[in-house]
View (cartoon, one colour):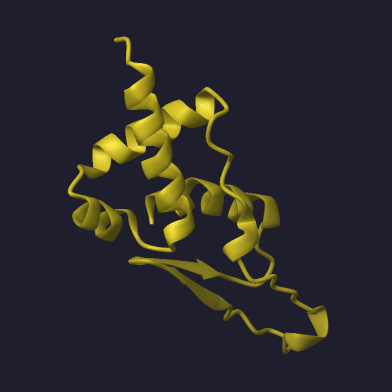
Length: 109
């Protein structure tokens, strides 16, 4: 399906506006009276066309875990809450796996 330059420009502005809004996709789409799946479609399309930057981790707070913070035999960890999602992180977690999960989940929240 081909789109006009005007459509691309309109959706590019909406996508950039959403990215900087700090709102959830649901709230932003309600305010702009657009469908979530349309916003998702255009964000993905515009990223493929390099017209929308990849999401940056600038909204994430760095977390440093020191081994001496854990008591011997302690198995508890932390809970990360991202929108409606909660991710439990236990001692000895795989940092690469957590980063990948967050990259996948972040656009959905």
